[in-house]
Length: 285
Image 1: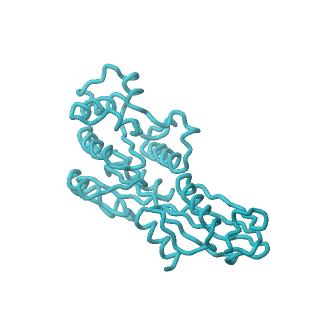
Image 2: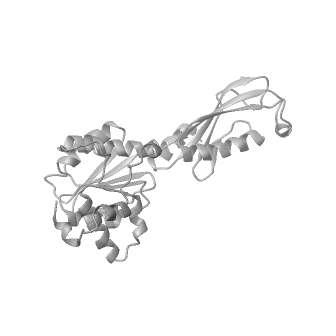
Image 3: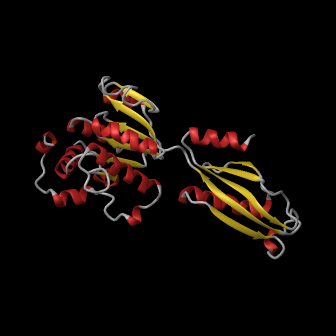
């Protein structure tokens, strides 16, 4: 089984993995320099770096690298550490580089208006594959989104029934109406998507939360929603808003939330900022 083909397959399936490569050898080891082992997110492996305790430790390190999404290098001195003396090794020292295999990030973009067109351009340049969803063919088409991964020009409910965002997916809601935003948010918070963002004022956000809670959705589902969407950089134009949103996507993708204390706008914060919000705000911009 070819490791490189398996890496491509993992990424296409939206899955994770980690590749361990022997990058330096000093002395005798039970394998060879450049030997590789792929560890998939389900724990299965392809290839080998020599077996024994070293391989078991690398397997554990690979699992951690997948979660942290950061590479690391490990050094093993087979001469001096008795736990590696399993009869499989000859002595020596080796360095093993473990790097994550990450799926291509997919952005599900609900809405195809001015903000969406600009967000598509900026996010695509930042490495995101974009899936566009809108109920208007005059907006959701290849002329406006020429390199989108997919375009769904149909009723939002029909599109959502077909889509299955995984844990690596990003969802941004920028439809033309508050009611559509609410419909999509109702669906989005019940997916395992890594990121959910919704455009709108603070009053609109809390009003939508209240409405969905009345339907029976647990309040904690909204704690992971980024709304109003995007980093607070004072963006005003569609082009600037697209940059602010993409910056937030990148911050989450690169695990920079600790550096951005205001990254999330939770339901609790929204309630404090807009205590008088009512369902009537759903009709306000």
